Length: 520
Image (spheres, helix red, strand yellow):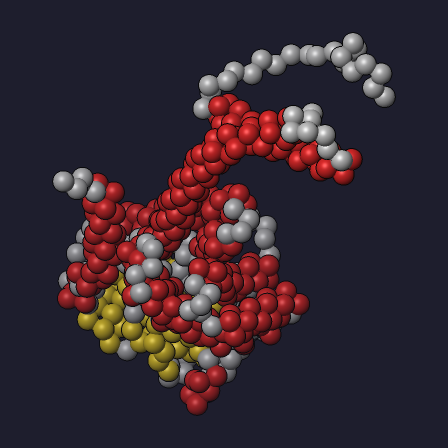
């Protein structure tokens, strides 16, 4: 009866668990529809008066905000008397060259304004600002509460910075007038890039804590897993895949430190805005290259060598541009290169899926890794291009991708180990067959050799009559050759006896004096 395969059961259980986690994380945004049910939105106005603000509810202030281009309005003045008729801009969103038809350009400054109707009997509210490019100040009901950088009306009096921050305020007559000064003179586009969220101070604090916990967990997890694969790659110098996966983990750890809560600013507060932006841009592209290189090292027959070289050239070229220029220059090409990186990632996932379809060793893990990678890449892309929260879905896809790839590499190494073990057993069996052949052949050779030696010795000594000098020389040659063959056969038989431990060798020092005579 065939024994039960517990390892196969463990593999399938782990695969099912990963699939369930990925499916559950993908369903989370679909289950959270509380904000849309109680929110009424109009241009420049959002009504949240019927929403329940508790210690966990957070509501995005997405919609059309009043937009005053090339104006930093005084929050203390009556806007109806001092400001022109506003335009409206969708938040989250940015002003780009595509909005020039509305009078907006790539660089400039503006004021966003939104009136929010809030429920009564709540003493305090809080806002969470994640990403405003590239300097901002937030006023609520005429009071300056928080900001990042210093927005100005020119490049000279603007200090760019894009830190996440939170602020607390009280409603006035159950209303909150939110005014945000924004300026951008460095990046390819400016504005409110990600949703601004409102809730109670406890809810916003819990959100901050959750994001920071996710960031630390992902950064530490990717870094430690990267160290593991890096060490494994150093031990297996012929195994480039482990080193490539390690470098991917390191770049993703750096990417997470420059996004979401931007832990790099927290741990290194003195880092310059330009240096931070360079790390942020390079980590976005290099990670895709290492995934591409990792896949090529695994499946060189499936992955196009030309495409790999193209990926390497544009990645190195972009990093060179970032290192030698300012953000004003490289931010203009960043979007194009990021799109190409996504194309590269899609091709990489295609190769992985093709390998899984061909039932490569560890195809279960490879398929799970493909699904997780698609979800992880989609989440990052939505955050970069659509302004959705980085943790709109629980961040399980990234760790599951690395886990699946690690298990896939382990399965390949285990398969290689089993192959080597089987070859070693075959080699051992061949060696044993060889020894038996030599032993049998030597045993069969010893009897005729002894007969040849004895007959040739007796003839050499004249038992068959006197020999001529040439005949004696021939007999001497036969006798010497036979004795050498006999010594060789005896050595083979002694070697076999030693291998089978039937002869015990006693090691000791032996003196040459008195044994070698007059040897020189």
